[in-house]
Length: 295
Image (tube, rainbow, N blue to C red; front, side):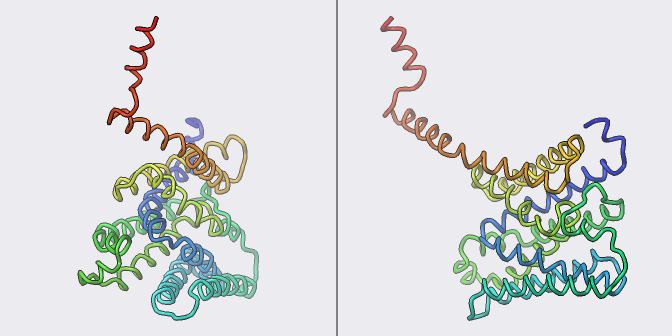
């Protein structure tokens, strides 16, 4: 891995992984706690409409993705909060329409789109210095909003009724959360692509929630896990000549499955310690002493 760092593209990729992991750790935690994974997936796929918008009107597709994903996030958030129809159905329709608009606009734009697949499936090794500046700006906005509205976000995540009674602007805070999800989706677009964005957004937070219950620690642990997953995925993709985005997701998925698998063992170990603490079960030292006395 050390020799790979002599290349600019590898250094840029590692920095991009760190920046994306910070946003994923913070926003992914709120997504997991509020159980809005489906909405996040809808925002991610609808953002493709912005890619098509950028190609059609000949401006940066990333800017188009920002505009379109913010519009989709606000639309889905309003649907979730106010509609009397089945929200999941309407969100699914908006998800499909966004993708369809993107495909049609790309077709109408004509010409050869060399980097189109990188927006769908990610191309972290192609991240430029300008992309890093955009990611840094988006990261600053996301972290700033999370810090500024942390108490309000915490309130609506755990007890929306209490938040309403406490005069917290619940709807406005919820729509702000939707917008931060949209910005995070745009950040991850160049790393793992729009199709696999939802995985990197949710898996580090899901693993963190299995081991940590404090909200701030959960965010920090999720961010660290994201950095580990992107670094290990990059290393494997570099030496095995694999697609970086998919490799990162496979590493995260394997870690999640392993974390779920060891949960029964951890619960049993905690139960044994609790029984030892209250004297219902002899400790390991007592068992060793009893064994020596019998000998």
